[in-house]
Amino acid sequence: MSVPARTTVAIIGAGPAGLLLARLLRRSGIDSVVLEHRDRAYVEQRQRAGILEQGTIDVLRECGAGERMDREGLPHNGVELRFDGRGHRIDFPSLTGGRAVMVYAQTEMVKDLVALQLAEGGPLLFEARAVAIEGLEAGQPSVRYVHEGREHTLACDFVVGCDGFHGIARAAVPSDVLRTFDREYPYSWLGIMADVPPSSDELIYAHSERGFALLSMRTPTVSRLYLQVPNGTDPADWPDERIWDELDLRFAVDGDWKLERGPITSKSVTPMRSFVTEPMRYGPLFLAGDAAHIVPPTGAKGLNLAAADVVVLARALARWHETGAADLLDAYSDTCLRRVWRAEHFSYFMTTTLHPDPAQSDFDTRLQLSQLHRVADSEAAAAELAQNYVGSPFE
Image 1 (cartoon, one colour):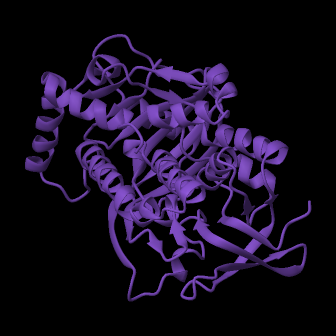
Image 2 (image 1 turned 120 degrees about the vertical axis):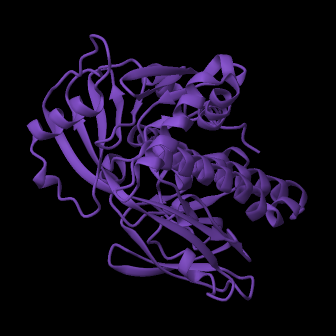
Image 3 (image 1 turned 135 degrees about the horizontal axis):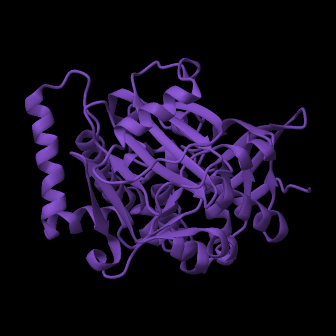
């Protein structure tokens, strides 16, 4: 693949944020180059999020990347909160004016966007490791990267860091400009994939004295389930039978509901953290997705925040491209951060309400149950949860 020495937008990272941005820019007539450190197989197989907000669904359809999602994705009109031996369903459409979510794995969304980029878009380089971002202060940015054993320089008008929490983009912002805010949680998630049909048509969020559990899915035949575990847990300490037994205990409910068991194909432990970077822009450098913010997965916001970031940025770049006006680019950080902090708060609420802290008292547990009962009993409280879960329309 021939790669120009110059482009309008250099995108570091071929995750959902970088690939979706490249797609949106292409449709606005703006050229870009995407640099990805990993190989294509790794990018298309890494397991991440699986819940798409209504806004993410809409933008994928609008940019021509929604065909397989609409064919294979699983629309969900609600979730179940399970506590005190009872289940309480939150109906999304009736509480949000018809909005809902879609279960469609991030791996599948990435595959769709990679295929479109390679077929219709600008250059997408795998195994291209960005090593430096230069020229930001002078307003003449460039990205140095290594590809096929040689170092190259890509000059551009803008650099967009979609390279995750450990990427080089955020580190290119001077420390006296950058502010970070974070929170570590005293527990992690043990996540499994299992070759068994989901035991529920919709997600179940379970609060119990033994810890949190989540029943999710990837397809009609593949289940995705999670258990709250102590930080530092080794998945090897959890044999399959122990996992299923513990899930049974945490999902226990009055009635004849049964958790279906099957072969577990993967296990992993994910720490829980909240993290926000301010600002999300430094001159011609823009941060998006996990490079700028991380949320605990309880609220299903990570992938959707990344999509929202690049929708805001793509519209700002389109305005600049068409008119020369930079007002939307100047507003990028503030615009995104309003949504980011709302999502951070919702994710914090879901996490701290559903997970017993190892150090919490009986009083704290009663407060959690009181909040859950309020959501179950109050239409106003249920509506607030539903509206946050399905997401507000993109800016």
